[in-house]
Length: 285
Image (tube, helix red, strand yellow):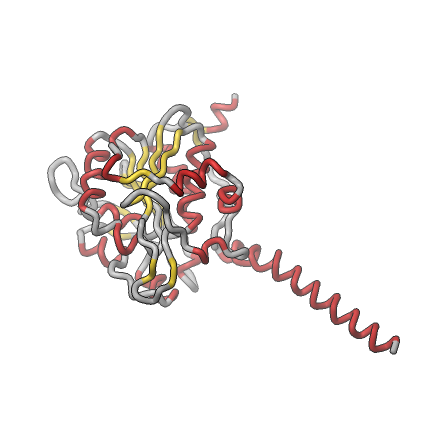
């Protein structure tokens, strides 16, 4: 009897230890591989300036019925980067109102510290419940316009003529524009001051065709690498044994883009630098 009890207790302890390892170890392992890496680069202050984050309004993955939307960290990480730098941050979407957020992005092994901060931040969550409609926003009033990605963005950012005009207005006003992952699809209908496509001849990055293939979600109507190359962009990207772990940020003048969900923090900091941000270390002195 004592032996059976001891065996059962040992089994419970082993299972508990394995569960604890999985709970704490899996997120750390994914970070070590390159997913949502900790950003340790230079940071900037832009006190009193304004940033606008634009997201999808599309909530369903094709005809699968699976909910989707903006990928959580592609909204939360830049939001807090800008807000912590002293900026006023507004959130807009294609149609306005409640922003759909990819449910998988908040899973315990994928969620970033910014995601968890968002879940406890009533003010920020309210902004995503009542996001501004892009029709009602003058993008030229913002120093930075950031296009967040996620699978939902493949259905509406690149197809929106309104978004194209708003980005064109921001560009003409000498603002810094860009985004990460599927977000740069929102640049496709924008024009520069000469009337040619904004991305034509520009160095940029976005989620790669290989990553889309590796994740097995090829049913979306627009794939960023394919579409941006076809529009004349000089597309750049890093690779890894799985592209979900790759990371790259490309700066071409006032156009700043990040390859995927791993690039949110670096892209936001690069945008603030280009917009005239003061190094945080200098500001602190």
